[in-house]
Amino acid sequence: DAGVTQSPTHLIKTRGQQVTLRCSPISGHKSVSWYQQVLGQGPQFIFQYYEKEERGRGNFPDRFSARQFPNYSSELNVNALLLGDSALYLCASSLGGQGTAGANVLTFGAGSRLTVL
Amino acid sequence: GQNIDQPTEMTATEGAIVQINCTYQTSGFNGLFWYQQHAGEAPTFLSYNVLDGLEEKGRFSSFLSRSKGYSYLLLKELQMKDSASYLCAVGYGNNRLAFGKGNQVVVIP
Image (cartoon, rainbow over all chains, first blue to last red; front, side, top):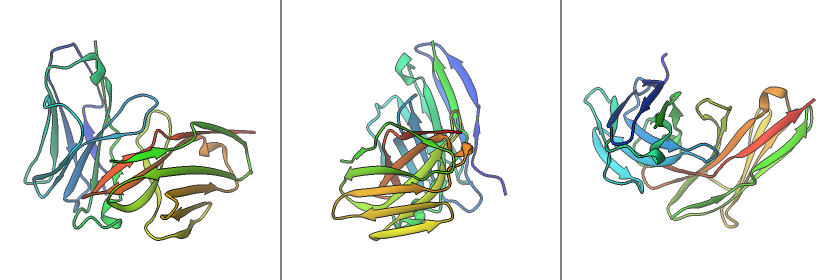
């Protein structure tokens, strides 16, 4: 069984540009979450989608947006890139549901490492 | 909000036992999770606790005290491959995790 897949794995952008990151969850997982991990820090929650609806948003500016498609894959978009957006962007999938601990067991993809110059 | 605190780094000898502590303050708690992250890789799930007490999974055990806002991860029979960052995370709301900064464990021969 394939795990969580993300693309691209690495990318370099310049300030002001826009980026789209893609994620395919584990088959059968209906919840997809996005996290940002800056070097030396733990992952920070950005978005969570369940059954194509946004279920939560972290403390990130409106330049960050996301969506989930009918096949449960997801995209994260970041507009007007800043140097501080340089980070590892992690997608995670889970069964989702009623917020039980088991449903919260996230399986992470390998991440997309974004460098903004 | 959520506040998770972990020590930043520790060094231990191969074959030893190491305990990684985590304290937290949160609203809407629905589980305490531990993840392992090797440098340059994604976090991988180790264990979780919902109720107070000890959960054992092979060489790894995790303990939770909800009243004290405290958890620890115990790694036994340390191996060189256990050198990694260990992330404590609190589950809250609907399928969200709030992570600590991670505890870097360095295993030496």
